[in-house]
Image 1 (cartoon, rainbow, N blue to C red):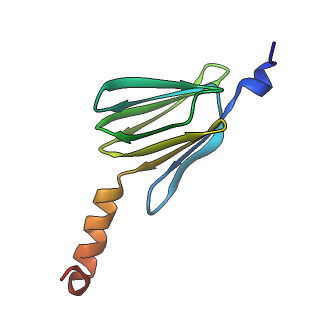
Image 2 (image 1 turned 180 degrees about the vertical axis):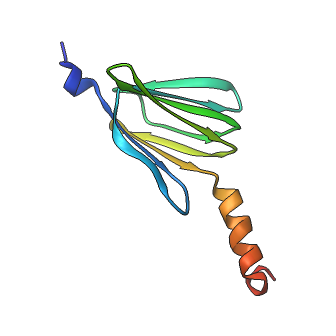
Image 3 (image 1 turned 90 degrees about the vertical axis):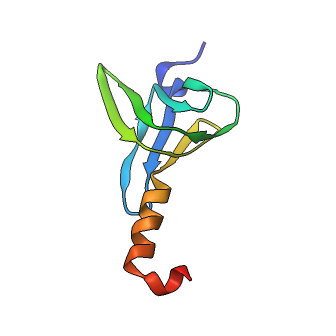
Length: 103
């Protein structure tokens, strides 16, 4: 049987402009087109588009990190969960700041 330390995920939640979270966690939940999904340690490799909703990260010891997102991507490989969130919004802001680049 694995110890709790071996059963953790490394969760990163990133946007184009900042890192929201880079920490160990017990589980993470989010939304995709099919509905709500949960990721625990030793999850199969997984890649999905996120839909609007809330990412919920169980940090252990009754601690939870929550972040509302409008859209994004999640990738799971070898107990590393990486979320790239709100990519379109940041791209739209960048295009607005540099209108010459959008043509």
